[in-house]
Amino acid sequence: MTKRLSEKVALVTGGASGFGKATAEAFKREGAEVYISDINEENGKQVSDELGIKFITHDVTKTDDWINAVDQIKTQSSKLNILVNNAGIGFMADVEATTEEEWELVHKVDLDSVFFGCKYAIPLMRESGNGSIINISSISGIVAGHNFAAYNSAKAAVRHLSKSVALHCARTTDLVRCNSVHPVFAKTEMMKSFFDNPTEELISKIEKQIPVRKLVTVEDVANSILFLASDESKMITGSEIVIDGGLSAQ
Image (cartoon, rainbow, N blue to C red; front, side, top):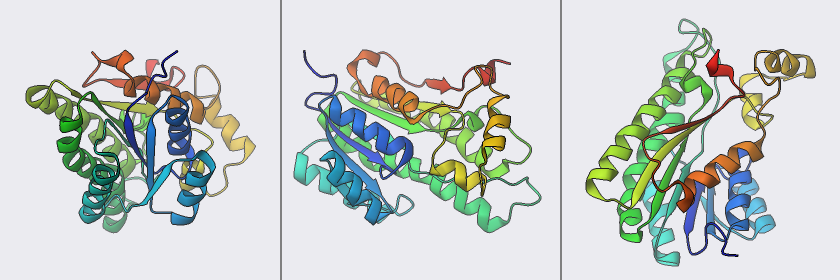
């Protein structure tokens, strides 16, 4: 049986841990040639060796790093079919407690990096054909919280930016799609950036707010990303997949 991503080349940012690592593993299993990138060089190389994939040291907030990453993939693999803009940071504070520096950092890492990724990868993806961009947003991009001012703003912008990119690609090429993914909380390193010490009591409290009463897993998210990366979703663009156990349905 043909693997779902055979003959495709993929780049997953923030691939050294969490959703990124799980996605890279799923892509590799389904036959893709996988690159992961991350600012954490030590963890990135470790995951690269563990999964048998390629690693690029990459600060997603810097345009030069994006240009280098895309050029490196073009030189080594001649094409790029899948881009997963996964790298990001979490931040929790209300609008009055958020400093200007914190606001700028959250938007630079969680939003500007997605803009850069789309901008610099689309030309190669257009040449390569049959492309899919998957931008990792959050349920916080759909449902707001009083203490998530910067994070809500950045992740909501990713959702709408993805739609704009999808419409642009539909006008300029019928071969590249763009969608966003919106997970609820998961037990990843990201959770530690929201809560210094996510105790079992705290996790239980969060779970009670989710109708299915459990957090999302990295595999749940990776499976949704895999679907959007594959040709099975060839008519899906400008949309979002919400992985929230019914939270936003309330």
